[in-house]
Image (cartoon, rainbow, N blue to C red):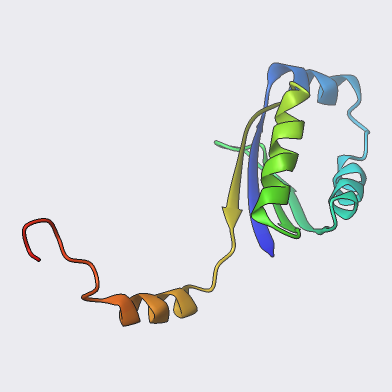
Length: 108
């Protein structure tokens, strides 16, 4: 499964960057992705609301959620949002087949 990860560093995280500006975080995140049974596909550092945008393949959303918890526990990550890549055409097709199944309150 493919996931888009958006992250913000805490002061502890940014302090770590300032103390070790040459540290190879891409290599560490690539290795981390492999250890959870996945693969780091893309990694970008950004200006704006999020500091990091990554695209990761991983076995499941549960795996990514467990990783999120472990990363936040370090104190270096303030926020980590996981977005699951989806096939919207397939979902829309399934949704189209369900039209009319739900009845609003008072409309049964």
